[in-house]
Length: 129
Image (tube, rainbow, N blue to C red; front, side, top):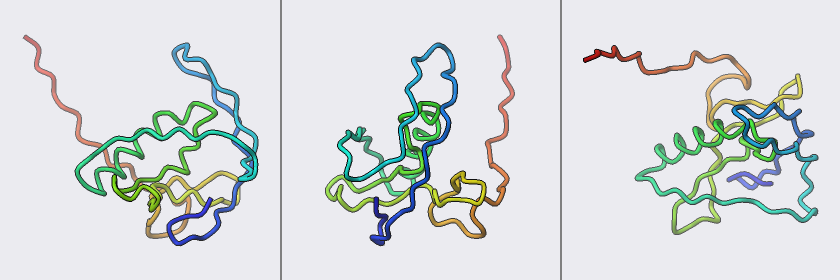
């Protein structure tokens, strides 16, 4: 695979598959990808208003499905509806020293793999009837 700048991305062996939560059938982890091998890629078109919203939604979908061995969340990309061949990466996904992948956004500042405090909305107080 090549990214937006047409730079070849290094691939590492597929991660060990995680157990499927909630009885969802588990998919076997895929072997390392070889662009010459036949296979299928699932494209799930979802239309949103702007690039930032597309990146946020794509990241959420990819992360939420990453427990499936067949999903390679790090290769998640977004594009405009009328130029789907011009894709923009969502995650950095570069290899780290421990053979894992950088989970940070594609254009992150700082070193790959650096821990970043996750920003979550404040919990809402639920008022019962």
